[in-house]
Image (cartoon, rainbow, N blue to C red; front, side, top):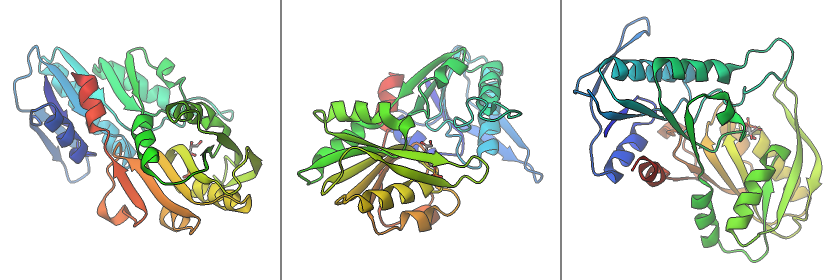
Length: 297
Ligand code: R5P
């Protein structure tokens, strides 16, 4: 097996290769002055099973194009199979038409990945469990929940509750609850204005009073959801609030929104590389490299 990496999450790709007792195979990636990329496979890959690691986080389109070109180059060079490890699958939030006239961006991405020759995709904590249905190739849908469960077990707190900041996350908190001996759960009623992106809430189902709260979500983008959720939880009498999110998208005004004093700590996975200028003191990053390596074995 040969492992290649795009430029979006090299540290994770290196960790995966290390866990598999190997090194990343080299690629020549040249970016022209107008931004176009030329990709060339240097090593022989004829009849090899190849893996490409690339998170399609920001710059989303650039990272997707790089992934498409790497897969195309591998297939043209005779690779037997190409597994795309896409720990964060960009455009997953636009998996259907929400309002008349919208594009289904994820379907466009799926068709392109298939047509350039991806044989399998390994990804993490998709926004919806229906997303694999958009693809005609195998999707291995992994989750960071077991890593989060281990971390939660290490945190002191007698009365604990898992909170989903929206109804879409109910399945996710039920799974985590089962891993934690049926820890109680609560759900926030979240509403998002699709035109402005602003999030509001009209309440919470479940008891959080005086409890240590673990908010679980698939991603933090602007942090607007977490700011709304943590303020509402404190209003309802919650104790310490810890946040667990798989994908640190970290866009827009996230630093301001996450600096809210209600939040003790934010745990995330390394499905997206977090550059130094986006690191903030409350952030702790947990690695999914071993899980990916295991699934590639
Ligand atoms: C939405 O349904 C997702 O599960 C996240 O809650 C959302 O994408 C987070 O976005 P933001 O941080 O911008 O509120």
